[in-house]
Length: 491
Ligand code: AMP
Ligand code: ZN
Image (cartoon, rainbow, N blue to C red; front, side, top):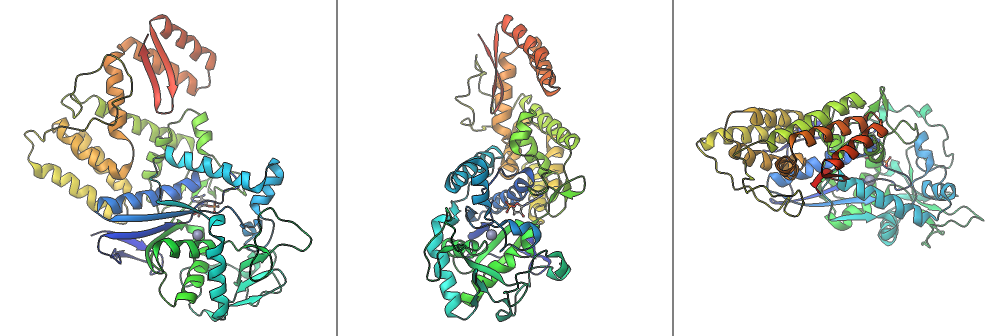
């Protein structure tokens, strides 16, 4: 039985979906006004692990993620999401682009990084600007039911009309004084904007006509409108980073439940932050790293995924380069180990070159050999128990290593391992096969030079690295840095 921690009840609970075989799941995506950082991606990876665990348990998951491409105001950093400038328009001014171009550019980069981390794509990346009508309709329904009021700058949700407001959050812990500016027109401090009016005399790049004044949606309304559109008025799981639990998610609940009178979401899941020197990694603090930064330092993006897997999603994680190095080493060791398995699942003859055309297409025809099925059932059961225990990935990784190091026939080990990798998402089959082929065609002394060159590049000794590359060439091999790793071919 899958057990998940539900932030709403503050307990680990048995997961019971609304439909026996299908799960509706929504994750709050990025605001696409700059690059997402590896803190953000920790949260999306946690959602990806959940998605994969659900699928591993046999559920068909309908997964939606939004892209906030409008209306997220800079006042949010100060504790008030309804004040300040529109982040998209601010970025546009800074970059000399239109707000639409900014949104498109950062959405594309986000999706590229998303794929590099092997995150399974949702059925839809739902953009706020593609769903203005749905958002206006929801505000209209809230207005008809008496949950709204107008101020000079917008239409607001009156939280005093929704007695359950804030049940998800630990809002009492937020001190009133923490808010720098307080909008004097708000009836209650926690009221929030549903629709913001374009400032008088100002032409915004992103603005729409509405039953009220011309303007743009408040930050929270898109998630209620789009999740209900695609997943129904009540759905199973909603995820996001831990900060969203305090304001954004309670606001989503208020908007949805005030209109429908039904429970909005059954399970709320929140993942903890990545920290740098004990402080939250964030755009506003500027203490961040992106996927691109790590690639520039020659890290494999999937080593970052491995690093994420080493900490439970509800535990904070301090990011350091030594920790990433250790994760990368462990990950490489894992792939190398599998690639050396002789009676492995890829026992087709090695090819005479290292072309990639068959990678990923070869199944594993391994037989369980002499090992009783129960041995593997034991590993697989323990793996399943770990992932089903509120996604205990550190424990799952420990089972994986135990299996890898065991003395059982490799073909059988590989069979179980590649099954487990459906959850880990570490591309173990493709990469070990790739490496195996490489080992088969590249003699040891060339391989050694390749590794030496890698080490020099990591130390940023590029001239020395280039000299080794030339030496490799002289010895009759071409070396190429590809997205999937280093490719060495005989000339
Ligand atoms: P944002 O683009 O700031 O709206 O954040 C997108 C997602 O990343 C949200 O779910 C945040 O809760 C999450 N997030 C932001 N900062 C961090 C961090 N340092 N560590 C983990 N998740 C984060
Ligand atoms: Zn959201």
